[in-house]
Length: 115
Image (cartoon, rainbow, N blue to C red; front, side, top):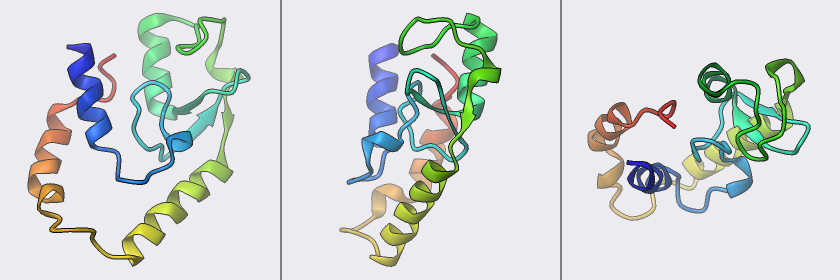
């Protein structure tokens, strides 16, 4: 199940989206980003679920990590928001049929907290 889920997550990342703004666990764009002292970037709810299921371990380094060590990343949040605004202002690239209702249905089936 793992590699298929990653392929699906990768297909949900908009074309040209900076990899630096993807959650280190679910590999999707972050909307409520936090950073670890080890340099990892995570979606807040995804890393919280990780801690519940796996304990206080960094999913990227294997080093000890607790939720209280995570720092808000407002600069990343602003950059992600700007990227999406700029992309929206440029208009759709191509037909855009793949980003219709089917994408929402696929998103509902793929649980970002399933790692």
